[in-house]
Image 1 (cartoon, rainbow, N blue to C red):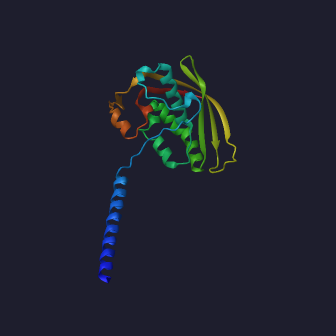
Image 2 (cartoon, rainbow, N blue to C red):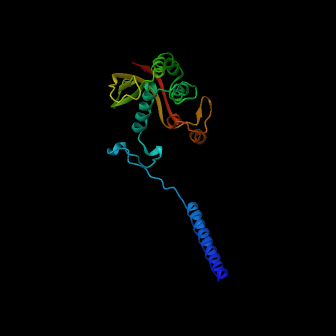
Image 3 (cartoon, one colour):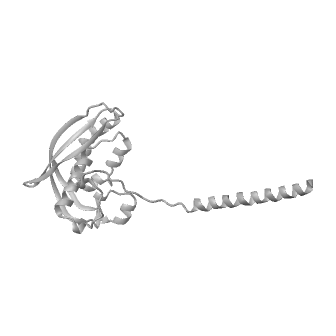
Length: 212
C-alpha cells in the first residue's frame, strides 16, 4: 500500500513539473511577443504649435522658410544654457551658427555676444528668446523684434527673470532651396542629418550683416 501511494505521489509530482514547464514556456513566448507602439503627444492647444505632417520644402512659401531661418538665427545668437559643452559646440566652425552666418558675422558674434553667454552660463544662468510675430523689410535689412528672458539661478521656481527687449537689423542672402556645397566642398545632406546635424544648416541662407 505504501509503495502504491508513493507511485501515485510521483505521478502527481511529475504532472506538476510538466505544468510548471508549460507555463514557464508560455511566459517566455509572451515576452518575445512584446512590441513598442509609438505615440505623439499633443504639445499645444494652438493649431500653430502642433506637430504636423512633413511637407516638402518646394510646397512651402519663401516667406515661411525665410522667417523661420531668421528666427533660428536670432535664437542661436542669444540663448543660454547652463552648459559649457553647449557653448563649445555653438562656437565651432562647423556649427549651425557658423553655417548661417557670413565669416565676419560669426567672428564678431564670438568676440562680443559669446563673452556674455560664457559668463552667464558659467554662473548657471538660463535664457530664452522670443521673436516678434512680424519680421519686416526695412531697406536692405530685415527688422526683427526680440525678447530675452534670463534666469540667473537654477532650480528656483519663484525667481523672476530679467526681461530685455530689443531690435536687430540683419542683411541676409536667401534662396529657397537646399545647399549642395558647404565651405567650398561637396555637402552630403543625408549623412549630415543622420549624424545629428541641425536641419537649419542645410538651407541656402546666410546672414551677411548684423546691426543692433
